[in-house]
Structures are given as C-alpha cells and as structure tokens.
Length: 204
Image 1 (spheres, rainbow, N blue to C red):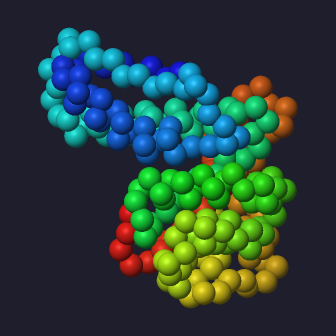
Image 2: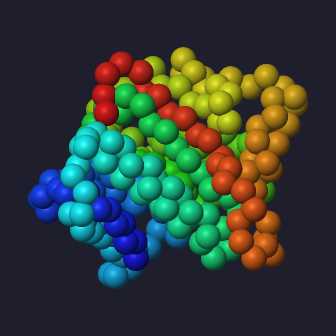
C-alpha cells in the first residue's frame, strides 16, 4: 500500500492521470516473485492548501517518489539478493508490451539463478528475450538489437561480444557489488544489476 500526499491544489482527474503515468513507470514495472496481491494500491491525496506552481514539477516529483518507493519495495522483498533494473529502448511495440518483456526477463528462473550466483551467463538473458519475442512478436526483427550488462556491451550485430576472462570477471563483479546481504536487517545499499536492451530503429 502506497500513500502519497501533497498540499497542491489540483483537480482530482488531473492528479489521477499524473499518478497513473508515474505508476506505469514504477509500480507497474516491477516484479518480485511474479505474483500480485488483490490489495496492491497506490493513492495520491491533495489537500489543496497551496496553489500549484507547475504541473511539470509535480509530475516529476511523482515520478521520483514512485520510482524510489517501488525500487525499495523490490529491495525489501523477502529473500531478495539482487535487484535488476532493465532499461528497454526502441521496443517494436507499445510501452505496455515493453514492460511485459522486462518482467518476462526478470522472472526467468534461469536468469534469476545466474544473477543470484553472480554468473555473467549472457546467453540466459538473450534467451529470455528471444522466448518473449518469438512468442508475442514473431514477425519483428531483432537484427539490430544490442544488450548491455553493467554498462558493458555483451551482444551486438547478431552475436555475443565476449572478450575473455577479464570481461567475465568485470561482469561478475558488477553483480556481486549489487548483492544484498542474506542476513541483513535492512538493505545496506540501493545498487542495481543494470541490464540494457536496445532494439535499434524507432520504437517505444
């Protein structure tokens, strides 16, 4: 349950539209165990005590608050060892479908197993993307797709970019650096395992 409060004066319908946009980029884009609760709720409440100086500033604030809270929600999940953050660019479909693919990737048991062991098994990431695209977008080309892990390119121009033991250690260290302590009472940092997917061309 998430409650966001502001003193801004704003119409209910407008605030709802802004909150929905923020939730789509945050709470509606996360996955912890693949399940959802019937009580999952995010509410924004405006007191109307202050005039609204800028809708853009309020929208930016909602993005910031929702993205921070949703990331903390994942980070505080029971047994969470890593938090993956997936950035998808130029997806050949809707923003909604791009979010579906992101969840498909992070929910993949093989990908989660590799990340949990700090194992840079890049084939599992590519395989999860391929299984989603083959099932839901079989006509779309992935010839221009590139993948990054921890900011380093791991797939480009239709083939893996593997440069030896040194790169594998760099990727493994990136995962290990983002790992959370198994017995910590609370998360000790806010780091992510960063995964980038760019389909090239123009898209969502």
